Amino acid sequence: MFEQFAFYFPAKDVDKQIHLYLPDNYEESKEHFPVVYMYDGHNLFFDEDATYGTSWGLLDFMDTYDKQVIIVGIECSHEEGERIREYCPYPVDTQYFGHVAGYGDVYMDWLVNELKPFIDDNYPTIPDREATAIAGSSMGGLMAFYSVIAHNDVFSKAGALSPAFGFAVPELEAEIAQHDIDPDTRVFFSYGDEEVNFERLKPTATFNDAIIEAGGETHVHIEEGGDHSEATWRKQNRLYMDFLWK
Image 1 (cartoon, rainbow, N blue to C red):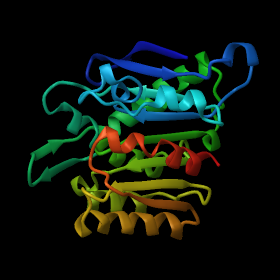
Image 2 (image 1 turned 60 degrees about the horizontal axis):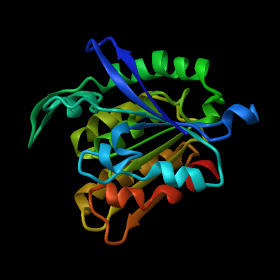
Image 3 (image 1 turned 90 degrees about the horizontal axis):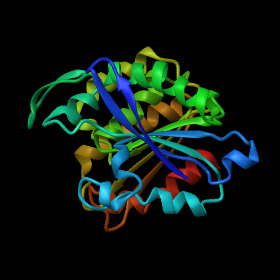
């Protein structure tokens, strides 16, 4: 079952489109379900909504998946240059984009303190940390990893697919040093073999080790023939869902 609605983001005085997947039988069953919050919500379910014409295919996947989960997809800003700022938790200077006035920390405060309580109040979620995950790709992958560190009291699991760690490696290293990571934390990292190189894997190895040293569990996947695209990420739906929830 799919729903879509607008939810106000006061930091930018805009409404965010929320793309929501619910198990088909949720009203009749009276069960409560775990939740995955995901970035780039418009790219998750329908090809016709996706930026580049191919979605993650999550509606069809979840309808046949053997674990029932609610997915909350938050659509990104489509203003020029705004997605990078929205999905970067720090102000950073970059080689290709110049100065990025990132406000991803503000965005996550909104998600944790406003959007999540609304979802928990209005839908049959299991609101506990152990039943709450976050996932995304590219800049959304960076944000998913940031969120499971900075908000480890809220999220116990993260899927970071093709994460754009190059934007903020020292900042993320400092973030890790500032937080206690619960040993039940799980993080899925992945790249396509056509996009990855040593420079991209180096910070991933560092962050992977940090989770393991805290007692957490990780999985690093390299997708054969994979590139930096929704077509590659949709092939991994079962991989990251199984790792996060089973």
